[in-house]
Length: 563
Ligand SMILES: Nc1ncnc2c1ncn2[C@@H]1O[C@H](COP(=O)(O)OP(=O)(O)OP(=O)(O)O)[C@@H](O)[C@H]1O
Image (cartoon, rainbow, N blue to C red; front, top):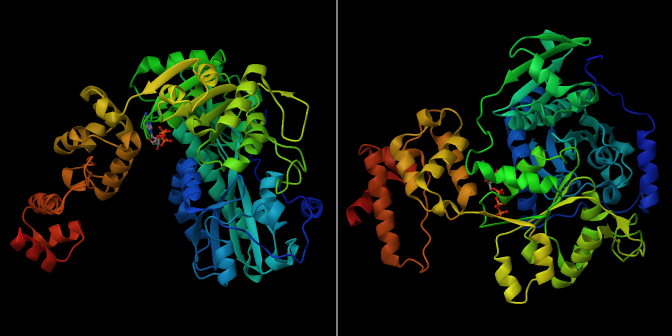
């Protein structure tokens, strides 16, 4: 086995030719308007939420971009697998007004609508692409040049691309290299997240390359089961006996492997699988592995999506895709086309090439239907047929196609009550409800479990990080936004405490929601109480208290006089 750095791929000379041919086949005209559209805010937020971990690591990698491209007029972009821009950074003054809008969050650079361009073409080709000025298919895009590198998830799925765009004449070959390094470092961070509390196997040609972005990284469970792997490591997976390596390699010791070196290490469990309800995952996993549908119910933020991702990583279907569909976010008129797919020309406005649909995309993996309670009755009927017959018939076709996937559905609504009210098909409810898991809201957690969750979220040094006063405040709160809200509060506190111990003064405001809107008097007394608490926390230092409250000293004095 040869362990090398397989990352440098010279651009295939016919790659752009292929892309131009595709644009021609899509029916694009070279003189047509460039229209990147713009996603509605709510959908943009949802997509960002889906890529939360990736965007988090991207922000951490920004210094790399800043150092390598310092002073250049260029923009760093992350676009998801649909070509929609979710994140931008870099020179805000680059480009004219139209270019600024086209390269802003929410714009879509899919090849089918925008012609040959680095984002869309890298997605179509699943490889790095550099498109300079006139190489763009649409003449309207010729004033920019761009280089993009695809980003693959820990399961090998294409998550999107990292792109660097500049004015046509201001592009540099090292921009592609920067995009590649950013993509690799984000991919590695995602694998590292999976390896927290588990084994991490690093593979490199020599000792000096062990901590480079191109090092092969594999996260492994207790007995060597594959949890995640980065792009470099995927090349070698077929040749490695992972369980044997976990048994034989000595922890922390460099061991020759093929033409390179392997290093097995144990990662601290900052985000180890939560110890809460230990039986829950095991039972769900066993059932999922036997293709029994799971129905997860719980209020918003209780961790339904988190649980499904954990189950996928541990399931026998880890090599297959996890296709998560938010049934509430799909526009009603496109819902069936998106779920069941359609043939070319099946309906006006559809893509010329047709679409496989989410159900067929889940082939060999897990289909996760989130917010299933939002599915209209007509789609419920068709879904039931798919589940009964294990076949799907795309719109415009009469030929059913066999499908194989494990099904997980989730809802924050009470589906049984919806069945009673005639809003949800009873037969579909029984189909989905092979086994029901209920995730309780945080306010119903016993104290010891909430403490354990805090420890899971804060990592190993939780006891040193969280003062007992701060912990008591967190335990006393009712967490209407559940784990999502708790996680956010801890993230804010972590930043405010600057890596030091988290005290009550670092906790953001924890709003109390009540059934009745608070009266003016209630609001005033709550505000007065907050002022007194902050002032006490600052030892009576008015300037510091005013800074923390975000008001001027004069206003603070006035409020104290009125109070
Ligand atoms: N057990 C857990 N350990 C660590 N983080 C968790 C856990 N459960 C949930 N989270 C985090 O809390 C946030 C909300 O979780 P998730 O999106 O899974 O909730 P949900 O129930 O699917 O919410 P919604 O119904 O609004 O879609 C995410 O950032 C997730 O990573």
